[in-house]
Amino acid sequence: MAERTRIPPLSPFEEQAGFTRALRTGNRIVLSGTIGVEEDGSVRPDAGAQADRCFALIRNYIEQ
Picture 1 (cartoon, one colour):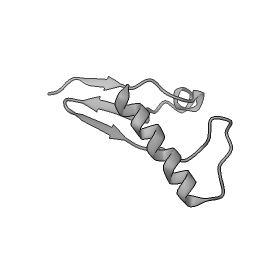
Picture 2: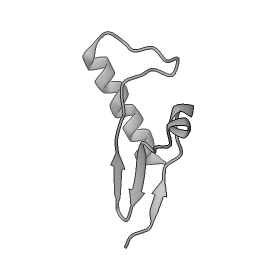
Picture 3: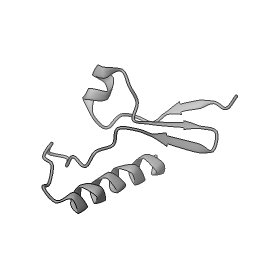
Picture 4: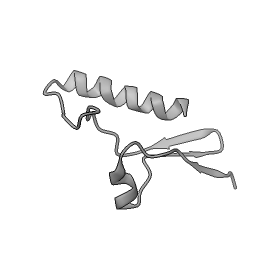
């Protein structure tokens, strides 16, 4: 069985709720629960901008 590595959380909610948004196991990174929230906690009204933010967060997880 491949070793699991938890990617550090980006928000305190992950620790409080007891889940991880990103987990590396073997050569895979599994993601869940990523939404387009900005660093200040706001959500832009444009769906495209929200999607761009999600992809930026996902890229950050992969780079970690």
